[in-house]
Amino acid sequence: MNVIDTTLRGETRARIQGRGLSKKYVTKNGITHALNDVSIDIHPGEMVVLLGPSGCGKTTLLRSIAGLEQPQDGEISINGDIVYSAARRHWVPPELRGVSMVFQSYALWPHMSVIENISFPLRSRRVEKARAHKRAGEVMEAVGLSGMGDRLPSQLSGGQQQRVALARAIAAESHVVLFDEPLSNVDAKVRDQIRREIVSLQRQLGFAGLYVTHDQLEAGALADTLVVMDHGKVVQIGPPSKVYDAPNNRYVANFMGPSNETKGKVVEAKDLVTANTPWGVVSGTLRSGKVSAGDMVEVMLRPESCRLSREPVDRPNAWQCTIERQTFMGAFVELQLDVAGPEGAFQLFALAPKYSFSEGESAWIKVAPQAMWVFA
Ligand SMILES: Nc1ncnc2c1ncn2[C@@H]1O[C@H](COP(=O)(O)OP(=O)(O)O)[C@@H](O)[C@H]1O
Ligand SMILES: [Mg+2]
Picture 1 (tube, protein in one colour):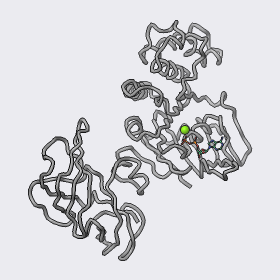
Picture 2 (cartoon, rainbow, N blue to C red):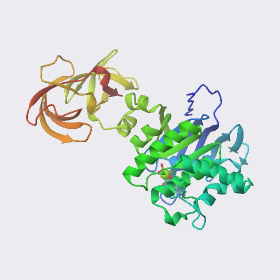
Picture 3 (cartoon, rainbow, N blue to C red):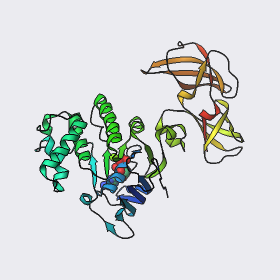
Picture 4 (tube, protein in one colour):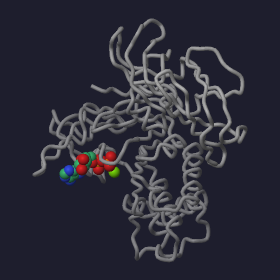
C-alpha cells in the first residue's frame, strides 16, 4: 500500500486521510484502474498537489474525497470522521463532508450576483445574511474583487469569474478546498497572477488544499507536498524540490523536467555505478532498484547538470563538444551540443544562464556523478 505521510508542520493527525482507495471502471474497452490502492494525507494548513498526466486518476481521487465519486475499496476520513468505508459500508454525501471545490469550469450561478454566489455555501448552512455577506466581503477584498459584489458572472472576465469561485470556496470555511485544474481555462498571464494569489491566500488563511494539475511548474509553485501519480498509483511523494532532484524512477524524472537519456550496461556497481553507454563509460548514482555487473540500466541527465567550460576537463563524465545551436528561452539559453563520444557523435541538451558561447564553438562538458542518474 502506498501510505503517504507528510508531517510537514509537526501535526500528528491529518485532517483528510485516504487509505487503500481503489476504483475501477468497466467499459466495453476493458477495465481501467482509475485508482489502484492509493493512500493520501492532507494535514491542517497544508497544500498537497496531485500531479500526473491526463487520465492518471487525479480527478477520480479528488471527487472521491468530495463524495462525488464512490471508490470500490478503502476508507476516507475528514477531520477524524469516517466519510467513506468500504468495509463498513459507510457513505456520507458531499454536502455533509465540509469540503469546497474549485473547478476548471467556474460553476457559478449565472442569475446570482457575485456576493450572492460567494455567500451561497454559508447561506445554505443557514448563516444569517448579514454575517454571510460580511464574510464574503472580506474574502472578496482578499482575492481582488472589491466593488464587484453586485455584478453578475456574465459581466466578469474568465479570470474574475475564477476569483469568484475561489472566494466562494474560501468563504465557506470548509475543512479542505479541492481544486481541479482551476487555471486551465484562464490565459497565461492571469494564470500566473491567480496562482501567486492562491499561494499567498493559503499562507495567510492557512486552509488545507488538494490541488490537481498536469502542469509540473504550477505544481511546483503551489505545493508544500507533491504527490505524483501514474496509472492510478502514487509513485512519489515529497516537497517539489526533492521530487525534482531525487526522482524515484524514470517516469517521475521525465515528468518533472526535460532530460538527456540513454541506455547502458553495468560494468561495476559500488557506491557509484559505472556503465558502458553510447555516450561512453559513465559514472553515475543509482536512483532506483539494485544492479550488478552485466545488468541493463537507463541513464538520465538534466540539461542544467551539464557544466560547460572552454578548458579540457578530467574524466569520468567528461566530453569535448561543439555548440550546435543556441535557443533563447528568456531567463536562460538552451544549448544543443554535438558530442564526440568513443562510439561516434551524439547529442545532448544543456542549459546556461547567458549567451557565453557562440554557435560552432568548441567546449568541454563535465557532469558530476551525483547528477548522472542510473535507474535499474
Ligand atoms: N465515468 C467513467 N467511466 C469510465 N472510465 C472513466 C470514467 N471516469 C474516469 N474514467 C477513466 O479513469 C481514468 C482516470 O480518469 P481521471 O481521474 O479523470 O484522470 P485525470 O483527472 O488524471 O485526467 C481515465 O483512464 C479515465 O478515462
Ligand atoms: Mg482530471
